[in-house]
Length: 510
Image (cartoon, rainbow, N blue to C red; front, top):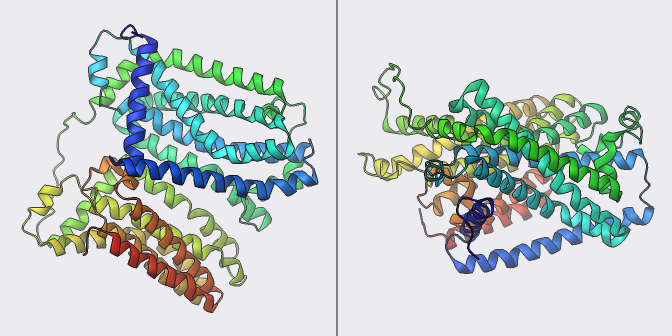
């Protein structure tokens, strides 16, 4: 079927092809066997999530799910968790719609309508956001359908409505940033906002739970009698999405219509300025301002010091990478708050903090190590410099571990003020986790552009899985050492075995 060029269906087919190619490249890395493994592994994980959801939902349904305010509050709270993830993803995706360069220059210079292009790309963002949310929520919804009845299927109509609303909010935020701070700073601020929004609601609920209920669970807030008492009555319109999820068909249809109408109105309004803002965003990297007069940073410094400063400077300048690392840093705030609240009340309350800090150290070190070792845009320049390969590698590792150390130091000091033994255990296991993740990135390093950070797992599934397993095992070791259990040897030995297997499978031996 031939489609007229530059029409809405034509652009939709064009975007669908690009999205499919991008998806296949991301999950396969150019190897068909990886594609088969991805789908086989994905089906297995999806089935396992259904089993876990069924084991949790089955007893709850057997006890009865009343249609009262506490139940609606719990459903609404879980929905807000999903919505915060939707909004974070939508804000990042909408920012890429304005700043993507690939085929944008060609389309903007053609007689095609930029309004049509923006409408299609906005719809694509809404669809991808809804699809991801549906995949995450489907084990819970499907098990509720099995145990409680088919009326829970109305939840699948609420997800695209929430996605549409999140994309509309993301568009308005992006345009507001363009107007307030200009195209040069919009990308940085938008990425930081995406990280904060993605983690903000979860962190906020955990903070309230810690301060009010001495609990680390975000769901403790929704079950509080004081919290339920201040909520509006059941006839309030704010309960419309929660009622829709629980099987109210009328509420589900109204929610879907409202979300679609808001997105359509925002898209029509924003499409008028898309071409102008996209051109302004495309010119950010080409603008040449006057270079500020600075001192010669190379005088009196060793080559390792210069390389370390280079890595820190690149990390500081790149907004896309900053948002990724900021997300990991934000999840350290609840443990810090729990430390502050329970300071001086014994070490028992802090056992849960140890594995969180150890896991964060491994994940943060793994991401930064990939940036320093594999994501080197000036790879040829660095490798041809009059510096030995060993000096370059040591400088990069030092730069990575220094950033991880600075991030964890305040938490370790708080732990030491309360219990120096737990602080030592946490520091020891965090160092093991960070160095293990860094070592894996050394063994599996493959030169790639730093812009490929979002797809770094494509380079090697073995490296991704090994890094995750090692971080989990060292976190378990830290948790057991904190209670002085000899069982800590078990996860420690497993971590060493995983490292040995990763070294054996890696293409690098040094």
